[in-house]
Image (cartoon, rainbow, N blue to C red; front, side, top):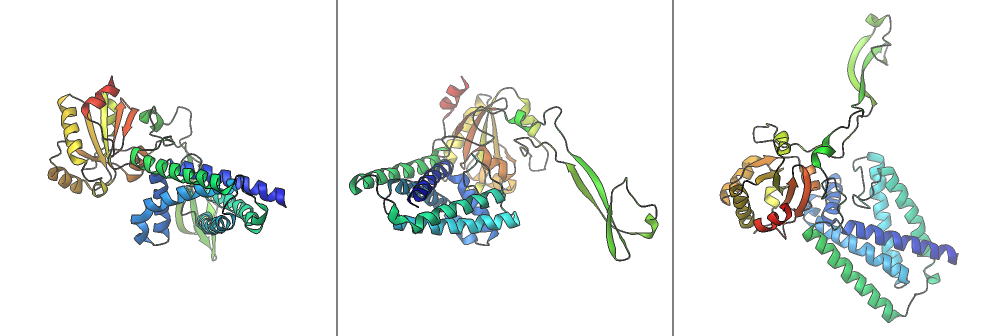
Length: 371
């Protein structure tokens, strides 16, 4: 049993450290996943705490995994791990049954799991953690308690610093479609030869209290004796889905400006303000100055938000901003940059550089990246 316990300890410890660091690399992205669960379980009062909760979980996973590998605080650690895995197994089990959350976010955007895969992963983890829980006496420390505590303290400080850094200055490793070097337009296109989907109409009829489904090729000869109920569309073959499939820019009248943004071969700067009312306070003056210098030097400046454009225009007047806001769906905006506001420099349609709300650039800095 000792060998099984040691194997379980190493597997769980390593997995928790990897999972924690991947989530800590994109703390804001993980908080979006928590918001999904809060919405499903009707707990909007937790929404303001989504980011602190996500940070806590990331740090806990890393520190707990390292403590497990060090072999210290075994009883307390086993209890915490067991409580945590029971909680998350319930969540992933619910997702697997209802499909209301399509990805648990366990490994951020680096590794995607279906709801059932997430649930099965948690079942395996639960078994391993139960083995650890029942056999904590078989786990001995790798080092003496002083060295172990120093290592654990350093791990706590490093994981905390890393989590806060990525929250303030964007993920160190970007796993999203809009990462530096990606061509937005190219990733929005359906390659030649790829399927655009195959569909057929299904006709639902009723006869003698029973319902029947027919397609256009197998309608019965005595169709007149059936009662028509409904017509639905059935997918025969799923269409190819581009990596970027929801990049749509529109003005206040709903007119599509996506092609206008894509058409220019020049550099352009994009301001991403996911929600106007959630913009980091104190950034308006920097944005106003930068936008003014961009326009004076013929550098395109696009401002994108998911907020109502009436609200955006009120904000614009309040802060004397001299650019036009355009609408975009909240999902691509969240993927473009994990910050509100954020700036993205494009060369034609390729991402060159990103800046978060905590390090917004001046025009001279933007010019360096253009050169």
